[in-house]
Structures are given as structure tokens and as C-alpha cells.
Image (cartoon, rainbow, N blue to C red; front, top):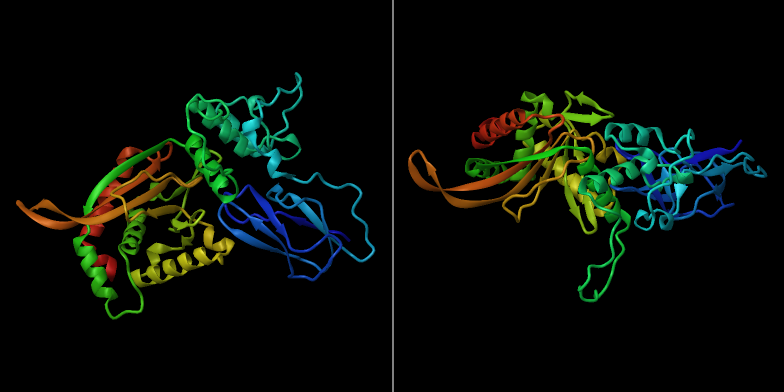
Length: 394
């Protein structure tokens, strides 16, 4: 009996993946566990394995973008034919997914349903968008959630599809198509901004004592504790006090979690990836440092598993070369902390001007879920924990 091969769901917010490469040809014999394709998502590259032994039959081409659980092929027994009623593959070639060259979708005839996914219809209703006016890029001409997010972003900005090069600009020395991981990150971030009410709070705090203590604990140890690890531990403790911050918004429902899982943004050559450290509040600083370092290494050598990227309830993004910045929320999450560089500067302390090591934190929240007063209290608690760090090093 034919075994369907479908696009796996590799993360909580994943809606589609790309068949970056087939490693086996149609008609080729494969064994259970063989890698048959390489899948590329916004966050990771993943090797898709055969679940059964048999002959591979591919029904989508390399480069096809396929919805989660969409059919990409079959594994057939010797002499078995392809099923007659092939389900429509939830895929579209990259070249057909360039909405910049498409106009608004034509409204369906009166009384006819608009071809769209349930998630797209739910999101359109939430954002008060006429789904019939959304340009469709999904399989079979369907409107998918990403189409609705793009439409909302253009609507809120009052813009049309991308315009030609501005008049008077010099000829570019080269041009690169925004594609692959870089394009998916761009779409993801733009869609996140369109679907949330983002508000950022900035706070400067004294990390002098925290830096001294982490250096003392690192000396002679095999584990190097950084100030970022100290901040992760402090965030874990502060999130326990302020559970509104440890939430995920899904389909209009705010989901609260006792488990505190912190994603750590890691910069790669062609994008950004956010592996997750689970149950941070229950781990020591040394454990957090060891696990975070291991995940960063796996990020850079491409060996992260889907589980390494799943389950984040809060995110920290560290940019050690700038004083401060405005981080953008990860899809669904209600809060993200941006960490700037630390540097010595003169400050007033107990009535005297002294030199202390200071750092700026930037907290972005979804104002739909988190009020300003809640965010301010969270920041105040975080400041207390970092400036009096002894409890964090126990």
C-alpha cells in the first residue's frame, strides 16, 4: 500500500517548508531511515527520512514550498502504481510565489467561497480584512496566513506592492534576490509587526557587581559564564513573579505557562536562529551557560534538531556592540528582551560620582497582552536581581 510522504511540522509556528533538495530520485529504492530530502524552514535545515522501505515517487519539485502536512511524495511497493486520486499537493514553486508581480486577488463570484485556509480566514477576521481582497500565493490559488499578514502590513503602511527603483538612483553594482532563509525571516518579521501592537521599554542598569561575580565563578571553571547567562537566569526568576510576561498568543487566546523556556537569538551568516533553553528557572547559572554554549555551537554547524527550536515562551537577543536597540517579537510570543553592550561610565551613587559598568536593556511587548505597568514592574524586578546578583549565583 502506498505510504504518503508529507511536510512535517518542525516548530510551533511553522506553517510551510521548502523542499530544498531531493537526495533520492523517483523510482529509486529506499530503506526505512534513509534521508530522502532536505527541508528548509525559516529556522532550520532538516533531513527528511523515509518511514518505510520501498520505491520513492516524488510529486513536487525541488524548490517547492509546501504547507505543513502537505503531500510531497509516496513510498510504493515493488510493482505498485501511484494512487489514481492524487491529493492536490500543498505546494507552489518559488517563482510562482512572488506577490510583488501580482495584483489583488479577484473577488470570487457572488456567493462563491474564497479559496483560503482556515487559519487565513481566522486571521483575516481578527484583523478586520476582507479576505477576498488578499493576493493568494498558496497551493491551488489558496490564500494562506502569510498572505493575510502581508496584506495587513501593506494596508497599515498605506503601501502598494513594491515599486520600481526610485528615480535618480545610480545603477546598482549588483542585485541579489531576497530569497531563502533571508526572505522568510523578512516575511516573518513583517507579519509579526502587522499582527501585534509592539511597545518597547528601555532601562539602564548597573552590572558592575554581576560582572565581578560571574568572573569569580568562571575563574578555574570549565564553564564560562557570561553576562548574557546572568540575564537569562534573572529573566527566569522575574518571569516567575510576572506570569503575564510568559505567555503566547494563539488564535486570540492568551496561553500562560508555568514552564519558562527562553529562546536565545544567535546570528548566522545568512540570518538569525533562536534555539531554546528549557526550564531556565530550574537551572543553575553553570547549567544555563553550558547549555546555551552548546546550542550556539549547534546553530553554527547546522546540527540543531527541531526540539532545540521549539517551545520558547520568552526570547533574549544580545547585541554587544550597540548601546541599545528595539527587538522585534517572535511570532506568538508576548515579550522579547534586547541586550546592549556594557561599558564603564560616571554615575551618581550614594551622592558621589563614581565609575560603574552600565548596560541598557530594551523590552518589547505585545501591548494587546501586556500593559505598560506590568512591563515596568518586570523591568524593575529584573534590575533588582541583576544589581544584587548574589541570589542568582547560588
